[in-house]
Length: 439
Image (cartoon, rainbow, N blue to C red; front, side, top):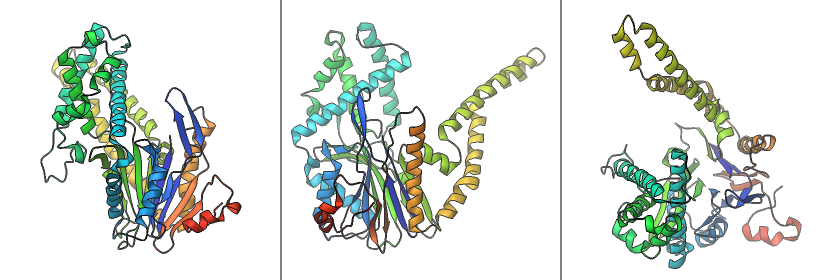
């Protein structure tokens, strides 16, 4: 329901976002073009924050939280952008995540209830059935998937050994030591409500309840991105940094003193003499990825799937052709795996894309001026919007496009910015924020 991007080189970082905001549910909603997703994190220093996905945290608007943080930060600054990000997290914790204990429990209930709905929907999709009535047979089907998921989670989400740099924990940092007993004590007041809302209580055993509670407990601890969350992207410079960087993170909820968040390490970017340019799209990235990689990601997947089907048919034909004269050879052909060949082709194509598309783009990006960076960022967002505008897809990316540039010398500069008021009769706003009207 959004598209944001950061484009970096040694001259600065251009950031851009669309204006789409959805109100309502997935089945019954309306999209407006009035959301602000780019914010200054300081009036004095070259630091900004972009947001995507949820516009609020624990029901408090991010726009309010970020502006209050900016006031609290005042003239203070940090050596690195990473320290700004860490200070912001400390600020959230200091403010009790802008939620009372009751708010936290209400939000946790909503979070776990959403997970339950998602789990049931996933089973319905796999089994091609409706589980709405939740009869005894339905409970048996759910219990089968419940056991499968618990076994899988316990295997895949086992805590890795410490001091292993190539193996990241599958759990959110602040929930690694969160015990099932703690979860049980926190959710004891409403867990049965979740069960009773989705299952017929007379069909649910104590064993089923305990297993389902354990599943939700593991979901809460484990890193995932399919429940409601906000992408927070810190951009700019620390005092000791001469080149810009970008630190993206996902943030879900606060519970007691714990914050359910993680850094998206694979999408971090920092300009240096070794890395002179970076393009970092977030949220709905399909169009931008096509331009960067030279091919639509979904189309590429279709090619690979079709080729896999073709290979399996050809393997079967070859095996049938030689089976009468050479059954041993036919058996060897039967054991060939198309997936292995597809993996080799994917690896080869990845190298070709990097050499033919990505590297030339990055080489050119390194030389762009700040103005060119801004134009490129705006264009990539606009093309995402345009694709949805001219097709029958829902317009989940809409204009106007907000654009800003952050550089070491000039700080945070708006290039394009929508306003909900008339600038000529609100000059006090610009004097209070040390900014000027933009068109």
